[in-house]
Image 1 (cartoon, rainbow, N blue to C red):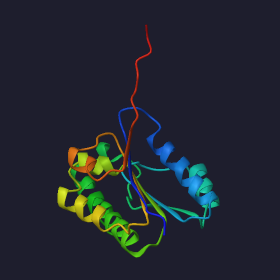
Image 2: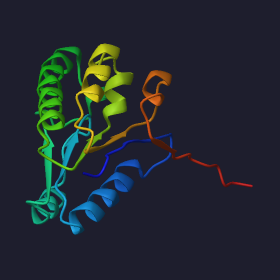
Image 3: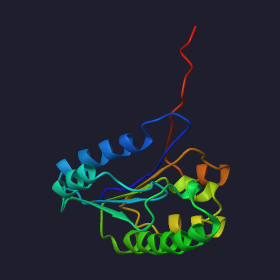
Length: 165
């Protein structure tokens, strides 16, 4: 059995989700099973949904939020409703990590859940410690807390650079 890793892709630059997806495609091409759970992303264009469908069953995408807007743009009532949907997605992620349902789990924009205080330190620790040691876990988002850093096997920090001279 190959040991899995915990990888964090963070920073203020763009391309974090795309980098994680590239890693997912590489794993699927090797016959491994990948699950991607996206958070806080708003609605997905129909073309993108269809593209993801083509990658099944090797790669399966899940989104638990029901509102088509970005989380940060919602009013307080809608945020409260979405937090419940997000919690369902977190429970699903924990189930996936404990049952060995996939070889790689990508929690896209998970770090945003920490920033929004939707995920507590206890929930974060519980989720990571529930991971089957053979599964790779990739977490994306802007900010990586010191607490999360201690669990990481690798951290990629994507920086946005000002190239104006």
